[in-house]
Length: 119
Image 1 (cartoon, rainbow, N blue to C red):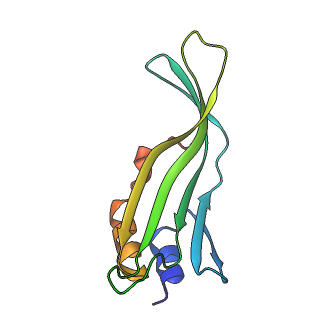
Image 2 (image 1 turned 180 degrees about the vertical axis):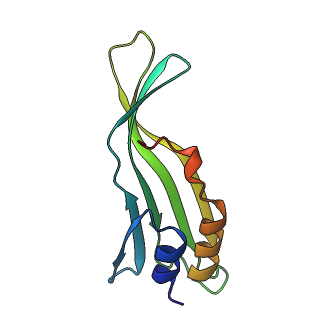
């Protein structure tokens, strides 16, 4: 089974696309903004993203590898402050020697209950 088909099967909430020139994969859950107070700070959280890289490295001493990142994008306004800044909330990082290893680790470790999604 191709990696993108496996991702579509096990993580169907994401919309998956593949970049042909770099063989990287990109997934997104489009979500309306959710406001959440955590420790007094106001978080305005949006979409959840997954990026799976193309092959990285690859010298005789260092074999090539791939990595994947999963996070929810948003902004944070600290308590009693006027400025806000961008955040990547609940970031998950996995890596492996090949695409199948990265996809299997990602499917095991992505838990959508960690993210604040609208109901």
